[in-house]
Picture 1: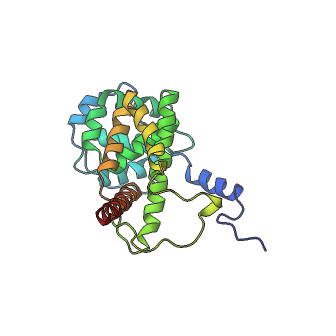
Picture 2 (picture 1 turned 30 degrees about the horizontal axis):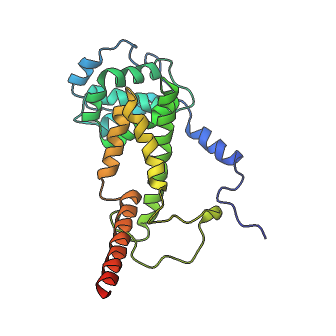
Length: 255
């Protein structure tokens, strides 16, 4: 008997759901994004206006902008516009000005955005480069960061149901089971899967303008975070190395 599928009817049902979630943010009459030459420096100096009252029958764009103003109270108009642009750029169709304005924003006001935006919006910005980057290199790095942080979010959320906090390596004996899809187990002492995953991204980011500083900042934050799979693997690796060193010392003293 065949095993049940995780996503019955895939790929058709999966793609249909994905496309449904990507419906464009429509505008009401008179609504539009700012002009491509909007004064970004002025927006960075302007505190975000309060959300106000959302009118009945508001457009999808107005509803999204209202929600973002509620979320980003206390930040600048630049931060609000950035979030609006990212929201449009996640959709299947977006205003023609959205991508050029997003790229101009990061080219001209990147340090300002990195200092002001909450971490989740920095990750969202990096991911947006995956589809809308100005160069193949930006699109490649953005896509890699998308896969990295998306899979981390899925895995770390699922792991919380084990009852373990993100900074606590598992201490129990490893289950006697195979990895999914016949994958070879990770070699804790000698395996370099984590390095092979992160190092090429970091190397590309160090040499890349515009997206590079943002990507480096995110990878540095990941490296410094006390939780997450990479830190737990590092702790387990160090503990295993310490145990092996202690055994070697013990054997040396016996002789």
